[in-house]
Image (cartoon, rainbow, N blue to C red; front, side, top):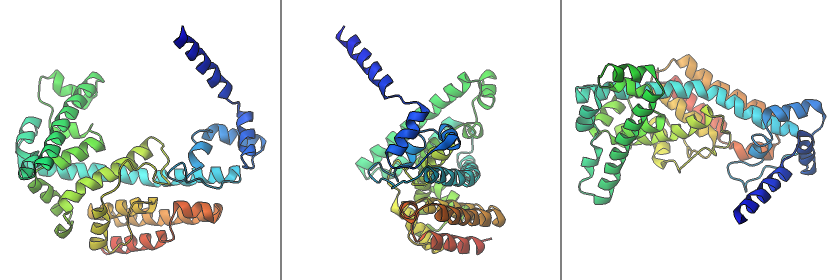
Length: 340
């Protein structure tokens, strides 16, 4: 009876906290944000109060509040974020697909088999390279064990969902080849797969990408994949990206050193969205995507920055984009132009 009473009180409290659209508009005004009219009310409804105002009232972390003064500023922040995602999405999908294909090619050559059992036995043994370091050995072995569980679980889920590229092989009582599995694995699982690869396979991949060996590119590429994973998930699920709140962990500082050493792009620390644009442009260059698209990607980003720098107050814009952003993009453009 006590728990039923508590549940009833919580339900009533939640109902009391719910606001109509008019009340939400008034709440914005009460918080110092000028807003009025049916047009803005409709825009708030389409944007969503919680995704919109609640999402854009801070930069990165909740305590880093933005001094918003009008509904137009909320709308501009949303448009800024959406413009970035529209530009990023096709490029990050292209990079993901290409990295999977480069990896697939080297794995098939190394394992001499398209099937998981042989690939695990021959090519996914990074843990054995850590035998002299007990703690690291355990970390890498556990990563490999989790990877196998993830892939088995993924195959089960995709078969249950009748995904044709997986269902076909199970129904024919055949092993599922790695290229079919790569069609359905997430970027996170792919990142774990790469990290479990033997160093000779990783080295073959980065050599094909013409990445420098003196910055331990073979290892860093795994960290790059996980860095992209957070951004890709945010873009795919309409998370806010403009303030890089999607970062799930700190980014390996070695990535910034790699970019500096290989491309002369300085100051990359992944504390702003510009740095992720630079990383994508670097990978598009290494993967030899068309120069015209690389150039357009960087030029579009500069155009987006220019538009929203003009529409947002400087104190708000500067919390999202550093004064070094244009210089970083110019350096990325120079590197891209010089590597056809």
